[in-house]
Length: 430
Image (cartoon, rainbow, N blue to C red; front, side):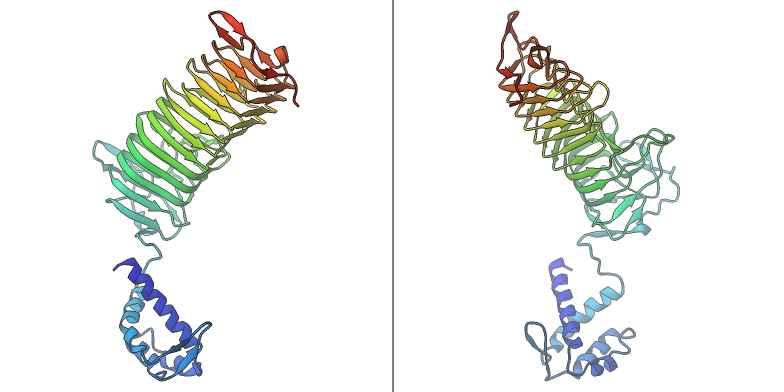
């Protein structure tokens, strides 16, 4: 049955009962429908037969019951489906608690390339398609070696409290090769875990992830997102995703191509891979901040905020930061912005303010450009601490920083062929 036809028929059903409820003599309708639950179709026929020739007023129109008989067949079919539970609020394959029926949390299931341990009462997605929750559930949804899968949490939550040693309790788990998969619209009171495998075009949308503790460990941070070291991400996108303050997110992989939009990582985000490609915009990173470590890659980060934690740390080459702010960070050895790579980086129109442990900007990267930036009230270090070679600091402001050498800028500001060049930085906060 097509969803559009179903929706139309549901509307008819609601209209009919709404009009009948406003009839001139409601007692006639009540008497005629006393046995409606016993035999729906004759009861509906009797309920409407007494209104032939009448009209009743609704909020915006007048409806005649003369032609009501033409709707009876469709109405009765819908009524029977509703009564039998066949009509779901989901426009997809419904999932409820009874689908999480794995009896033994340690029982293995066969996958395309290996066997895995089911983390708890699990729903192993059987095939490609669109699925949605119809209630809050306890357990784990596993997507293994599939393509074109959408899991709509439908405003509900999924919780898994079972964790294997050194692996977080996963409410959503990806295994082997998964392509074109989406998880959206709900709360995950555990973690999302990517096992060893290849993941292409994975989308996480409109999610609140509270995180889960690692098995055998108690206290401290749990994980909101985690992945196996052998994972490969061709493309993963997170949009409108929020994590809890003690829920750390981590992508630990061979390589990753990551897109973030309007996300709030209250527990911070750590990315470790041989190659990292990022496209990040309009996102917030608290607590542990954002850290990226790789041998190669590139990326653009714009309109991001790093606050009350570890600031921004990059050991990934070829990173561009635009219109970013790093403030109130106090983690050990952290600066507002710390560029630890030996390759080109660009930071423009960004602000480091009130960071209490390191510098406003620590630039170890060579051949980099820092322009139109402000470093203010970073109490333990320089405004701009530049030790890389051939680095330009242009049209920047440094003031009230803990180490005020060179107006808050440490030399060399620009070095070409062993010669240091001055740069257009200021010592005034005006």
